[in-house]
Length: 427
Image 1 (cartoon, rainbow, N blue to C red):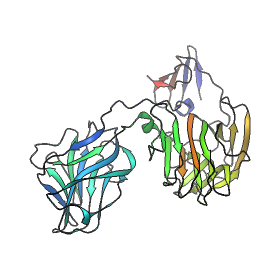
Image 2 (image 1 turned 180 degrees about the vertical axis):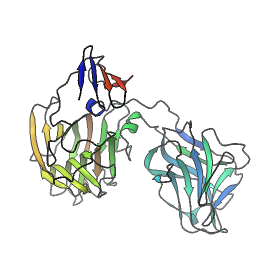
Image 3 (image 1 turned 90 degrees about the vertical axis):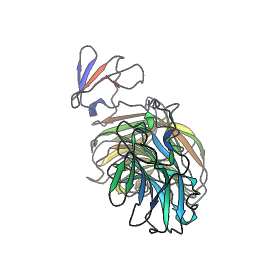
Image 4 (image 1 turned 180 degrees about the horizontal axis):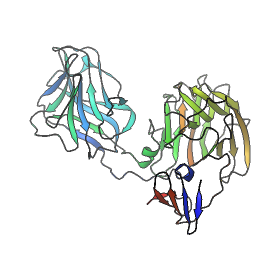
């Protein structure tokens, strides 16, 4: 229960403090563009093949300058000996040895011969924000002792750069501070606190804009799996909550292709891509197909977002600004409502969701996603002013005075409120 005291003091749990964020993110302070950069004259190479070393790279250590930076591209001095077969790729593996980012594969047989190595560049499939224990590695498990893929390194240097260890893998990892692999990992631009609060797999088409702190989105025709999310940090109520945000559709021309374009928004139980069938989800979708151009509600249990239960709005898709309120009122009840004003007073249209009893549960992530494919048309927009209220079915009308303090009884953290829409700041 939230308790109000004299002197602008407020006490309650972390959940009761919501909302405490409004897409108000400042840029990450470290602006160095490279995570790791070592190159030079050829002085040896680590040979990689099946039954021997199959992974070779670096490990991020505690205190490394790489921590908090985004891995985007990698360029390594690669070569081959004789005629290796199969493919190689670069990966980022976390401390649990799970791949969290990877590049497209390369054909081992097309690499230059040993001692004539060339810098070969690849782009990772997602932007990984590095943490301690992450490994950036070249991986190759084909060939044999005579037919190898090689990564150049300087075996005469006394030590790795500070904050890194060289790592090799042949069934188990060996980490060492000697010998320097020759490759460059690019991090331009570096992670912003918007990226940290709202991770994305595509910083070009779905990202918190570092310059204005809005979430910009474009439904493109080549990648069906873009998503951006915010972890609320706990599983929210299964019966009562309210999510509000400003939805700007800045550019729209109808898709005339039989492959649909969709923009999803709402609360999900998972951060998986939109087409993975593991979402418990309540929200909406802008659905744009050659024969159907609709705003729709969307919900389901264990669904791909392309196949949930929907209800159509009569309000047509157009370039406009809407204020969206998604409200859960019970285990089986929820609504999505559009308003024309920022005070959520003038309703444009409201639609109820049909939710099966007891199955759409465990929601935790504010979620936005896109699905495209071989479509056409234009669907571009912005999300702003996100607010979430848990444990209520009506958004409270609360105005905090500047300088108000909030004590979280479950975490013992303290926050102070600024003026206007400035979010709570921990003190």
